[in-house]
Image (cartoon, rainbow, N blue to C red; front, side, top):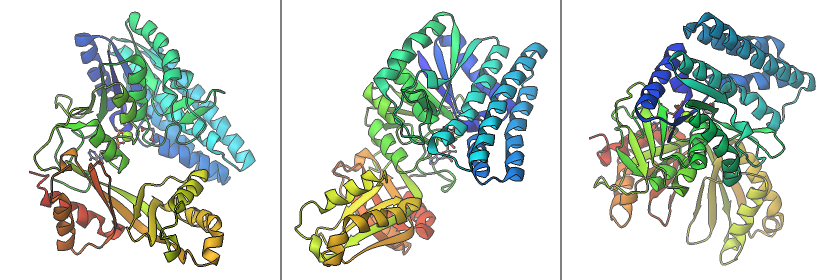
Length: 467
Ligand code: ADP
Ligand code: ASP
Ligand code: MG
């Protein structure tokens, strides 16, 4: 059996949802068993988060306006699905009841004037909890039996609201028997992406873009033989196609490469998508709903070189580089441990670390919004060292970005770093910090955000990735 996931871009309106039904239906008629994972319709999660924030600010006028956008988008989509009148009426009722609950929830946020992370996850969950019904009714209209399912009943997570992690084996025990029952009844399960629930039953989300991760979690739980992630581009590309016009689709990449690309910003996959697939060696395909016959990108544990070493370039924006500087760190064990323990205790995620061999500096990169908090945490943790000048200063450079050059073929291939830095030098791009993992799978470079596009174009050209 396979798992197919459809992203928000594939569910933008009724016409697109009908296309999804066609893709699912033609596969089902040929091959049988499949489970479907769906995102919210495009823009809906953003709108939901906006509504929660407006309710917290008690901005009645804007809240009502944004809530109506959500409600009307879904209602219009139902009307455009060309369902039989009684089915249309049923579906409108379901949407009405879900949006009514959402409205009540937003009203209570408004009363409190406060939204917790837990409540924000509950609000965010409505997009997927509505879209499962749209897709399952569209499948039924296409002549298939389908059942909408909320994954919060099966996918257990920890309670890290906003970016929860699944408890895979416990989820599997809950999910597998239920889905198998449906498949035996020739019914296609249509499962919410993005969400799970804690052991106490509170809804959690897996982080923005999390439906990709849901797809491989479901694949893991069902021992699927493949997971197909349907999106709006032809597969994983040599660079973000919005930045690089001649970016090319990569035919096949390894789990390690895909994990590295997604971790370093390739939006096509949520950063943790590969973990459950790699654990069970389940191949993952990235395919385009606008071009369904195109084979897309295949992600497996196999290494397929392209002779150039480098496979793709990714970027992450909106970052801050935090540096601890001081001679007193030289030869003193435990400084790095203290830095990263203090950050971990504050739940600040570190994306990149660099320490020069002189040990004079430790630099690390965090999301821009975490920058000031990181500085504060470290100023407290190193109070004494700052006082006795073992650490001279802790400072932040804002508006930096990371560019990562990724490819397993770089291993043992001399010259990759040289070529990368020459490409940047040619364009007068200033490099702020560099790191290369010992696996030689990636070279990551911190630079000013204003240089980012120029830098990607130059490296993409230097490695002839567009050819
Ligand atoms: P979905 O709604 O299907 O989850 P997303 O918008 O989350 O779609 O992800 C797909 C988008 O990721 C593409 O439209 C593309 O603009 C962007 N993207 C960024 N980097 C890459 C890359 N290296 N390869 C493919 N797409 C990329
Ligand atoms: N709907 C969620 C989001 O917009 C999850 C996803 O699209 O994968 O982040
Ligand atoms: Mg996505």
